[in-house]
Length: 236
Ligand code: C5P
Image 1 (cartoon, rainbow, N blue to C red):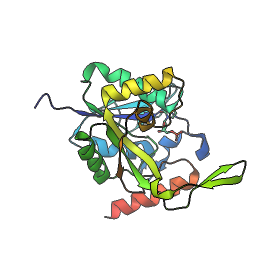
Image 2: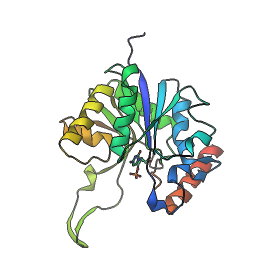
Image 3: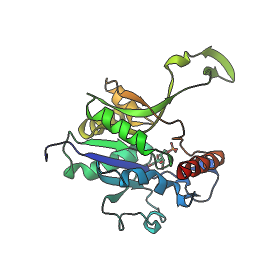
């Protein structure tokens, strides 16, 4: 039993979220009675398969320690200082937990700005990735027709059959993910999610179809939408 790989979580929460137009970072805005970050962490705190949660914070963060659910009040939660981009924050968190992990343990990376992850999608991802040779991510199919636009002119129409939105969590073996991000940095490749780093080193992660309500809060409209989704969830 003790040799079974464990699942760990990394939450990059070191962004300042300028596009939402608020004076406080978007992960600390209140929706449906809790901060966006608390909603984002909550499914992992309640999941018995998660061994620990590391939250990457901005060096000047003054909000995290005031949350009801923080590194002092919950044994599962730890914090680390994030970096200059999301990928730097993730790598800082991975480096900070390296000593306690086995290379074959799994890490699930989840954006602090995604407050609507369902317990069902989390379980779907863990079940699929525990047995997949690479690991994978939650995403959703694109319903709109997708255009490639340059200088406000349409250059082409992409085949939407093959286009998916990439969400989080994204789940990979710790050693593979850490070395993929390190390699991307070394080669000056800009990555916006973990799967891109894994793809860059030649692997094909699996895509698990999840609930399209697992949105990333980016603008003020997203806050209103997330609030509606969370209220719906509460009424179930
Ligand atoms: O800005 P964006 O929405 O892409 O950020 C995605 C996630 O990455 C957010 O949870 C944000 O707090 C986090 N992030 C980070 N470190 C940065 C920039 C963003 O942890 N330097």
